[in-house]
Length: 77
Image (tube, rainbow, N blue to C red; front, side, top):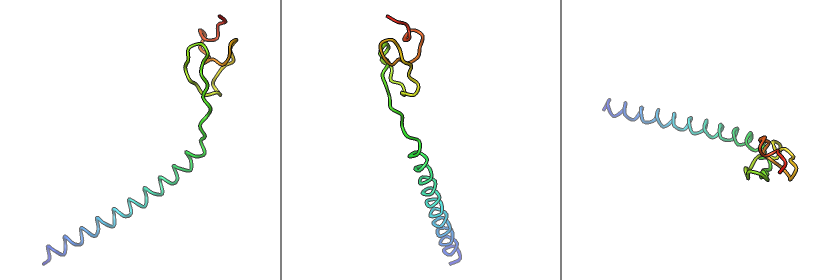
């Protein structure tokens, strides 16, 4: 009888710990979701010379359009 009581108590303790862990994970996910929404994705542009896609904030204006900024791509041809 004592063994059965200990098994029931251990199962209840594990269940409580699991519920606490699930609640903490939900809070972490909600906090991470709000920070991800704040970091907005930048528009991507394609380098006219090599074809690499880069964020528009990092793109350089070349003679024929937007480039990735590599010296070979900035040369006029």
